[in-house]
Image (tube, rainbow, N blue to C red; front, top):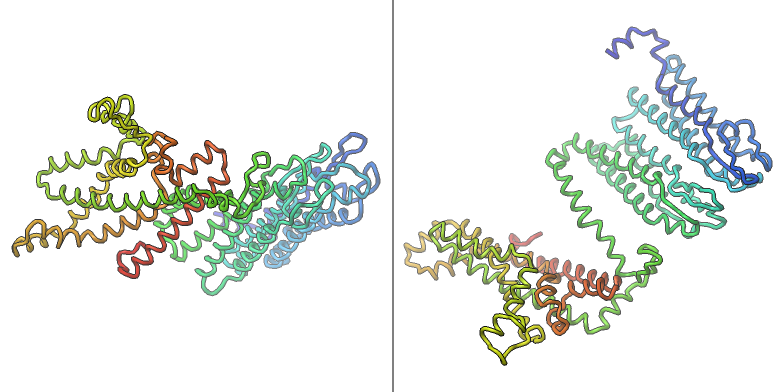
Length: 594
């Protein structure tokens, strides 16, 4: 229908670009909005953009020439865009598209420089408490949309590839740095602070920035790379799309980091608050990221199944990777009056304090030895019980045994703690009252030597059902022909277990060992805190890294020391998994995790 109407329209009408006219008119309309305010004799005055076209006068004098010239440039570019849009049929769509691009870029640059220099110009003219208003963003936004329209025209004429929209969004990401990233209050006037101000070390409340942020530079460079890749793509579109993906991800990461550190950068200002402007580069980066994913899908690098992984990957990112930023707490001395991010860095002092005490040796020893014992005992008993269950021929009996053995796994550790307390209590415990008798009682919650065995027993009692089910599933998968051939050869049940079952369970044993070695620096908090009832007399045999972190935070209120212990736990666990997997890979490559 659209093609039919265009074919029936006269040539001069077909050449008109109505959407470009609307955008250019919107750019001109933005000049009638208030763009800056100032105070004189306790009265706040607003200056509209058109006032700078003829030399705006203020209560203290006239404005310098530079802002006036910049506003004139914006008005001329907007008028030129309207004329070009009307004469597109005569000058040619290609020429009109290129001219629209040039007019949009010049107008946006002039409006951005105007927003960065107008405060100084008004202050030099005698104005007080000068603040830039958000009205200056309208010409910039209109110029960005006009730039996108120019790219679209050139794409229709065959001068730009299908990825021209990525170039447009990249330019918009750069232009969005003109939006207010933060506001601060000085002498009861709210002042915006843009991304470009971060790049130019602008004065803040009669002072300069505490540090120069290089992140906006990185965003601008990545956006420029996106423009180059989109306008002049490489021969291999797949490589181009991957590079675009990396650049867009860099824009998002840098902008998130800039948002987090923004208040620290503006520490010289009062009542500094971040605004919606910080979300704009992130939004454009996300749009480019999604567009490049679509490009990879078109190139058959990604499939529909890959996109189905996105929810899981997002959950993994939020739940597992973003909290890793908290490892920085291990290198800070937390001061609640300053906040987490503003607390001073202390380097490795928290680790020095941790390892200078005897507690570090105790918690490391307990965590490692208990977990090694749990691995050996758990795998051995799980394998034995699994083999026993596999030998039960009646399904009803086998199901009953499985359920009975697996039931402790489903019981909360708090319930287990009170079950143990019912046996070991000094006043009414079953062992002291029914077995040992009066006068022979043992204070179990004050006797260290019995608790390593008790904790090992309780842990194995809870885990043996889960381990046995894993081994049982592996045994069921063993080829029954092996057992039939062994019976024909006269092998006894014991020989079948030692010669067939256990060798076939080797991959399962290795996999379980590797998975549990990865947790060897972690401990079951409920087992070591709830079951011993947090008895101080048992700390030498029940205190592990997890319980130490909890007590440091909740009892001693020492977040720095707790974070150092947690970081030590994570790093050692990673190195241990990596080392053990490397050893297994050398001995048996097929059974390694990675």
